[in-house]
Image: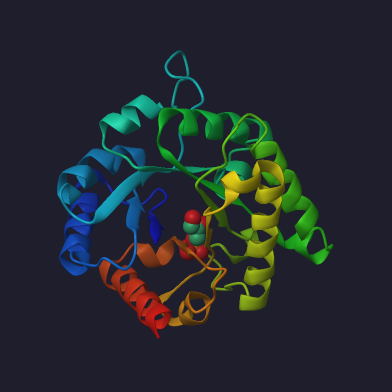
Length: 247
Ligand code: 13P
């Protein structure tokens, strides 16, 4: 279960939220838990979470090791900050900041080469879905994102754009169908190396709507936006998912 804090929290707010999460989640062993604060808050979160069972990561990383790339973030800096994960190709990067599939591919390759764990995000827009293009869009995003790598991303996330921040979580049947499709595409590209890839769902995931997904074999976890910004709701979401999984 990974919280994506997006552009929320100043360093002091992040430290506070991380401390609260640590209090609520310390000792949980049934789930891998992480948070991805804004880059400016990673150091504060690292300080608050060191020695806990909660890992941390970044929301993006550049494809060059270093250089003249104003405003970008290097994987070596993220490693020094103790990051485990890096989100790559989030829909907000693609749609708000115009990141192309080629940029996503280069970022993904660098993250893998650096030893950080990528979370490759894919997902269709509302219009693409209405036009029946979901499979085609996902096939393209996966194929192009993986163009420069020999081993698959350890984690992929299905984030339908229309479900992000809208309160409209995708139906379980659709999530299962898409997760299966993603697994098939990655297996076709990487063969047996694709076994064990974890596929997360993201898009309006809340404590109140996680249970049915958590009971599905196709659901390996969640990439949680809004509901990860309160320690109480993120902890409740994780607790409900574990409870349902153990059921
Ligand atoms: P919400 O959970 O706020 O819909 O955001 C999902 C998301 O984009 C996580 O990366």
